[in-house]
Amino acid sequence: MADLRKLPALSALRAFEAAARYDSFSRAAEEIHLTPGAISHQVRALEEELGLALFTRHGKRITITEQGQRFATTIRKALTEIASAAEALKIDAQQKRLTISALPSFAARWLAPRLWKFIDLHPDTEVILQSASQLQDLARDQIDVGIRFGVGNYPGMLVEKLMDDYYYPVVSPRYRNGRLPTTPDALAECTLLRMDSGESWQPWFDAAGVTLPEPSRGLRIEDASMLLRSASDGLGIALTRHAIALQEIASGDLIRLFDIVVLCPNAYYFACVPEAMHKPQVQAFHGWLKQEIAEFKAQSSWPG
Image (cartoon, rainbow, N blue to C red; front, side):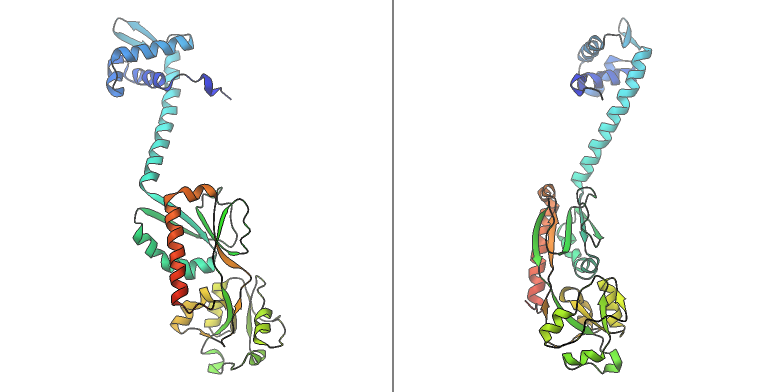
């Protein structure tokens, strides 16, 4: 690897490249806004540093040498890459980008329907919403913010709890032709839908004061959104989280059974690498998200 401490002065390299392109110190001087004498001086200093002539001089006329031409081609490529990188940074500065990763059910049912409010407030920010069940390597995947449902143990990240959530059963009003259970004990005669992630009915059974076995047969569903869709289609009764079920409850596709809720062992967390929190768009989203959650809890009969 080359020793960058021995790199010739960038101003001299730029002066040489321009002179090589134009075969003229005068035209190079016009481009760089220097005098021809200054260009000639910088090129002469570069030649002395390299120990060879890059141009042959014929009075005021110059002709680049074969070695100089090869060197100029290399420098031109490097300067072009630097210029392209600088232009990309300028574009990023002009158009801010915010990449958010959230749990699929939360992204689709809670965050996405509200994001237009943030975009209206920050029209200069491009928002990219990704859904993922696991907390990726945010730095490696160039993700600014991760919103996760867990216990908040995300080493190396800035983590803030956003809100708890609560479990309760929901059912389609058309389930069993409208013959819905009227007491928790009656769930023994119903089809209870289950999540493939292992979320248990048992804590809710205990809170309801009923002795029922954990469902072990029938349909097991991988995704919380699919679970709610199956319940809406009348396939059974789902134990769901309050924050993601409100769309179907508000539309009448699902109704909430009983007045018994159980606090989820997990909660929603905001996570980002420490460097991301310095970005204005991340700070703006963080503030907006907290305000949106406060309004949501105030307007949605939040159980807690």
